[in-house]
Image 1 (cartoon, rainbow, N blue to C red):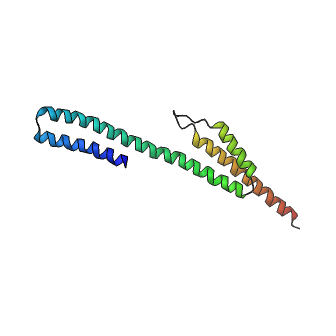
Image 2 (cartoon, rainbow, N blue to C red):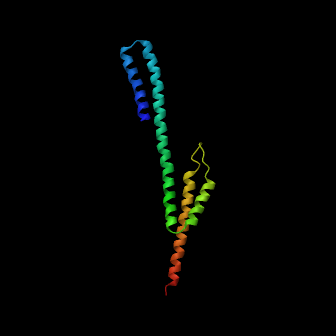
Image 3 (cartoon, helix red, strand yellow):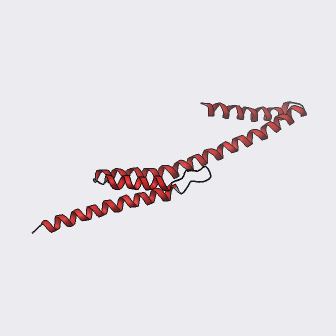
Length: 135
């Protein structure tokens, strides 16, 4: 709701400036024109911020989704120790920072690969064990 109010106020300033261009004397036109320039700057900054937010959501959301799904697969396969170990290693390697994305995707992909490799190894060992028991 706050965003709607801000956009409404900013667009109202632009509308007032356009109205003043055709009706008012020079001083109000100049002042509203300057205020409109500031308004457009804020609108542009808001649009850039929203786009950046969407990009960050996609970046972190995709990586986290893969990690969660793979972790659940590992737990369902009975490989809880492997999942916990991968999460602990991720916790040790990841350092949150405001400066960049701190290689989050690369670190989560490495954790996912470790969990999947352990699941594949345990599944392969179970298959070999069941094949050797057959006559």
